Length: 147
Image 1 (cartoon, rainbow, N blue to C red):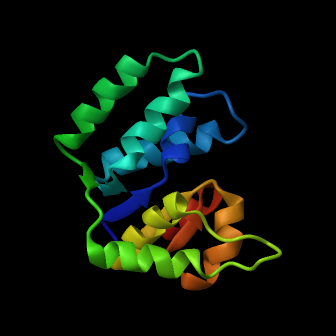
Image 2: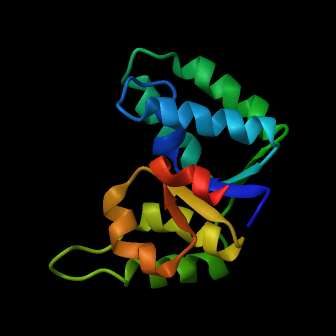
């Protein structure tokens, strides 16, 4: 599972926001760049990151420029194919009527991690609690143990 990860949009966005765990997101991104770890994301990642940073005080244009730079080296945005969509649907079914079901969006990241045999790094504790039994997922505050 080395040399690649699936990175949740919320984790990437945290480096531009002032949140309690922003320092962890910054440290993770720095580690990915230094160690040249490939970042795999669904195409919706771009939209999610830009939507998040555009409501804050950070320039969405600057963030987009950074994304373009990353796409030239370590960032790989992928189209979801039928095989991946089937895995996403399977993940969405793992929830429970009382606790809820994983969203299609969150599950798309997780499916990519499973299919690429790597970790999905997220700060979404709800998705994590619903799907941790599937493996290939780690919370932002535990990323160092996975890489």
